[in-house]
Amino acid sequence: MTKDRLPPHLLSLILFVPLASCGIISETGPLRGKIEDHNQTYTLIPVNSRADLPGPLRSTSIGTVPPPVKGGGYSDKVRSRDSLQFIFTDISAQSPFANKGGDIGPIEVPEDGNVSIPYVGTIHITNLSLAEVSTLLNEKLKPISSTALSTVLRNGRIARTANVIGSVKSPGAVPLERSDISSIDLLAATGGPTDTEHLVKYTLRRDNHDYVFDYKTFRQKPFAVEEGDLLSVTPDSSQRFYLMGAVVKPMAVPFPIPEPTLADALGAAAGLDEQRSDPSGVFIFRKGNPDLVYTINLKEPTAVHLTQRFAMQREDIVYITEAPLTRWNRLISQIVPTSQAYSNFARLAPTSTR
Image 1 (tube, helix red, strand yellow):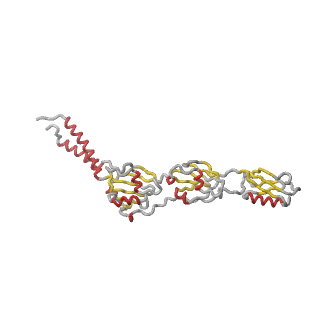
Image 2 (cartoon, rainbow, N blue to C red; image 1 turned 180 degrees about the vertical axis):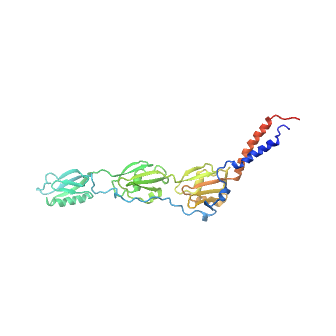
Image 3 (cartoon, rainbow, N blue to C red; image 1 turned 90 degrees about the vertical axis):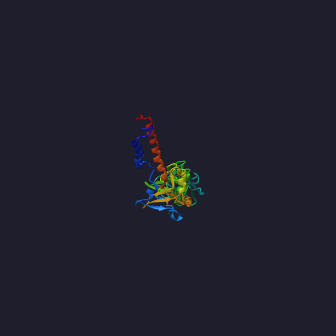
């Protein structure tokens, strides 16, 4: 045998081993042909023009406005535990209020709403405005003195509050001491979300029921806040798409803007992997009934503009197929080291002489 010349059986082994491994070469996912040769589990839609683009972006709005339970969060009307001052004036010297100044209080309104006023008796004042309480007292004073007048002042009250927790800048209790406080006002009082607004969701607990809103519904359908409401602000993990296949950086990507396009998705992955990707095999997998798979050929100039108009939806998967040559190169990369190893073995093996 000539030195460094491999025997035929070894040469056959060198060729057989890599070629036999063709069926088990690692792949990053299905090739373009396998996706296009699909079965009935999904509908394949080639996007060649604007007419092929999917319809308007599916609304992500969720949530139902909660029904009122306690009514408005704030009211100027008297409620239990308010601290009231009663001032009586009278020009008549015979009036019991003339010399003492008629200043009674402060009096804390009990739970039953009944307060006792000297010379007047017990009156029920909850759910009455301060002016209505004064009018009621004036009527009660007429039998005592026809010239007596009353004024009712509020010294203080226990604040009614709603609470905000979660991903906001200043979580905590928010006083409801003015009328018409809305859900937007409640959020603004905490400084707003710490995360990008379109990446959070809102859960309102009222009367042991939860009402969930995405950022659109929360902005578009404000509702009146009530005492005891609890608003939770949490990340919305469904506002994302996935990048897979022959891209520079496969990942799950939170929506960079409220309504991203395919161009935004490709940009988030730092583009296609130039050494591995097949630009003619860009696929967008979308869950539905039926499931849909859109395909775009980026080798066509018009496709670049289509990526800017293709609206992404939550949980979409953008998959870039590998170029056919990539798989061949992977095969060669396995053959070359193997051949080199056998060549080194042949040089080290003892040579035979005739």
